[in-house]
Image (cartoon, rainbow, N blue to C red; front, top):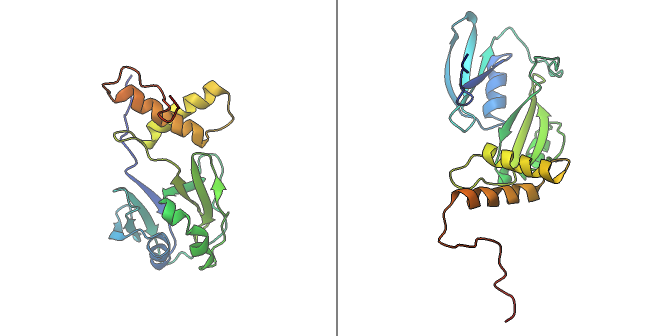
Length: 196
């Protein structure tokens, strides 16, 4: 038996209401360019809109002009999508409250997640959206996931409840130490400011 190895998210498709609500939210609020549209090839009464979330992947929406937006929270039963999270820069994250407030969009306010900051709000159809900003940049050649697994190991080893910034900083140092060569025989921390 062998795995069907994935290599990333190809796209996520959401059932939307009317076309303009989707364009106004995904492009007009979240800034995702509207890049492609065609009929839903499995249901000719629907249109299929494509948006670029910023990483080369796609968010697609099935729209139907007969459907109207319902802002009630989408179901969270087992098997349902709880929320979608999108990356934003620290600069953008610092503007989230102001920019959501100016539109009258109710939100959670900033949430401290230890390794990232998050804010939550619903789209016009009740789907919970998270905007997340990592508190770290991985060393060159590494992914956020590789830093996270190293930080997780340190957190568990130290008996800490959740990942904090110290775990991230130490994880980054460990990855660099293990995978970047140096001419120094002793790469331990030093104090070049000591007297004598």
